[in-house]
Length: 83
Image (cartoon, rainbow, N blue to C red; front, side, top):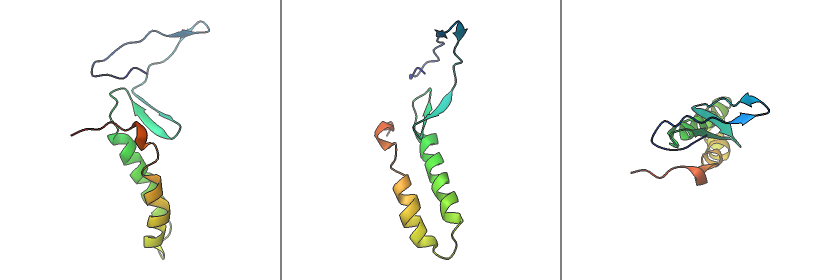
């Protein structure tokens, strides 16, 4: 994957076949996009946390604090800083 502001077409061949170029993919739990923006990764992590918290109605606040909040910063070291 090439990160940048312009669309770059890459021609990478492996074992006689051309590798497919994609707009986004998940690597080690982080959603990587070709424009290097992290908003979709953040949204995905919040949604994953919400799904976990939704399963437990009785102890929603406790589950939110234990399951959702810790999941949010995973992968944050590769998020792009924006205004």
